[in-house]
Length: 407
Image: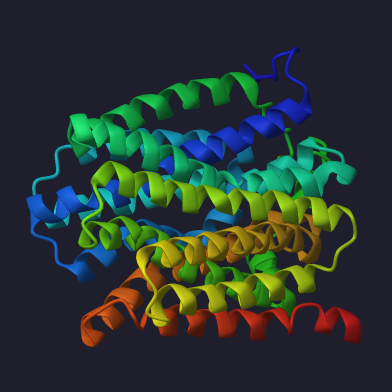
């Protein structure tokens, strides 16, 4: 039987529920940092192995982002989300059986696949549900799903870990995700017969160009590549610093609960930039200006936090500004990804390409920072690693839109 949206649920409310789905998926990504000290002790992980454990959940997105975008278009955006939530339930519950480094790494990789299938279709589904004049503001909210999830899990997860173990945290999240799966099935409208809101059952062929044609069209776009690489340059910095903050505070002999609170405040502050970017774009502020301000501020703040020899108080406020102003970047890039998609049919594949580079940045960021810390003997050269990503991001931003201007 075809599932329809509940009459009381308007499209705008369904779009807002999609943000909650993203937050739920983000809980699985960020449940690891507060549990990392316990996992290091139990499994004997060193710093570099911990960096890979932080980033391995992005492995699926790094290699399957574009393919998942195409897969979501073929099977239906809603159906793809349901499958992804099911994978997260399985991997989180089964992950509690991990007794070795290899097992925890395997289940984190599976979680990465589930996470990708959940978040990949959402931008295209939001575009289908909401009117164009509200899109930038809803996308600003959607781009906040990761920092919102980070705040929730760092606060609630740190508390749960203080009274229980990481395995209980994994089980609680599996149960919560199972609930979200059921609510998604009830609330989100079924995919149209053609899997596109503008198609009909008799026009599936027109709505679905051959997969290779969609790949070729997407990858042939210079702007898609620039946006995707820019996203990767941003996530490499943000994930590396936020992911290691509990470890940094533990070395500074800050208690686990306090460290979780400080990290949650910093991660949550990213929401301010995300929402601000949506509003500023709606008011006509240049996307390029927002991106350049974001990257420039992140580079300066990283130097102040790690390279200027300041105490932990100055470091905290520098990273706080790093996260707030850096939040201008993801919201702006999500809007640009939808705007610069070569055709309406390639919206999901464009988002997939962006997600693929974003995942690569999240995969490469933590190990690079850990390697720099290992060879330098401390965290004071962290800004060099993150600053290199910032410089790459600025170079990519300057290239966005040039091909369109020439045409």
